[in-house]
Amino acid sequence: MSAQDTQSLSPSPPKGIGPMQRREMWLAYLMLAPTFAIILMIVAGPLLANFWISVKPVQLADLRPPTVLVNERLRGSPEAAGDAATLEYRLRNSSQEEEIRNVVLKDEIPSGFTVTQLPAPCVLDGSALTCTIGTVEPKWRERLKIEGTVSETFLAANRPERQSTPVVSGEANNVLTNFDFTFENFSRIFNAEEFWSVLRVTFYYTIFGTGGALVLGLFAAQLLNTTFKGRGFLRGLFLFPYVSPVIAVAFTWVVLFDPFSGTVNAILTKMGVVSDPINFFGQRAIEYSIFGIQMEFPLALTTVIAFEAWRYFPLSFLFILARMQSINTDMFEAAEMDGATPLQQFWYLSLPQLMGILSVLFLLRFIWTFNKFDDIFLLTGGNAGTRTLTVDVYEQGFALSNLGAGAAVAVVVFVVLVTFATIFIRFSPKEEGL
Image 1: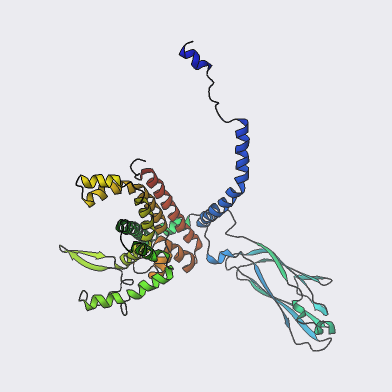
Image 2 (image 1 turned 45 degrees about the vertical axis):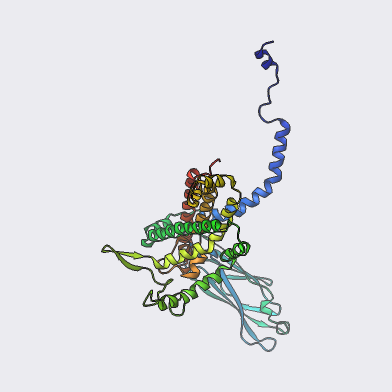
């Protein structure tokens, strides 16, 4: 029998997915469906809501839909049965810009209160009061007074006018739920003079903060990768900036660099390095000259970047050190026997092995730093040239009460990060051998 005949008689592997595997696959999907749904709601829900708000002229006051507010009071001081009293309803439109249609007030007349006069829009069915008000304009206010007399039952009760709660119904346009969309928010932020400056500051802060954290982490990992007495204590000490509460370390830095009572300025002044104290977190820039060319050094932003690198280098340190300890030491011994210097061993042996973890750390730190808000807000409040896009989101949404513009800036942050992550993952360097 020929080899071709033998191959034709041998059973071929099944193609595709069999019925049993298909049923198991759908069963697995069905069991995981609740988990997928929860993750989708947690992740996609706020993201979609942010996109929705970004194309609407939403102000902070629009979070509460327009409604008619009502307050019921008893006017007069009845002391005996038959005395006159007045039930007064104070109503107002909560919106300053939107009208409310088909407004109807419903309430129950208290026991022992006999109505003698009703205002025009109100009717009484037994003890049920209905006032058909209709359409009310923005900023509308009105008082409805119901005249009557009281009985002993009314006088004996405690706050009888509060026995029932008045209910007001109506229809109004809600900017959050309607389908009117606009790109006014994006037009406003892109045409603003400070937006491109804020974007440039954000990239400057993110790139140098991320790079500084990686360089410090790489240096610390290289330093503590060797064996010496007290290495475990130093490794734990290096984690202090990362595990400490951000408000505590930020306050410490502000006190240390204070221009009036800070330790750093006191040392620099005593050593004669500077003649006057430096406001590290409050001075936008320092002018200097190189070959007759006047230039500016962004002092406050650089100080914030130094804080960012110092605070977050321990994360890079941990990952890089773990990767270093997994590298085979045989090639370092061979390189040392061949006469390679420590710098050559690091550059040609260690660094190529660390490119994978460095790429991942750079991507993660870039995303986290780009989204950073608390560090800058605690140190400078976004002043002195340190305003980033995340601070701008806060300023637009809460300081200026323009949630739509704040959401539009947040969408810009999302688009920038998704674009960067896609390009970086596509072209990021890999470790040798991967």
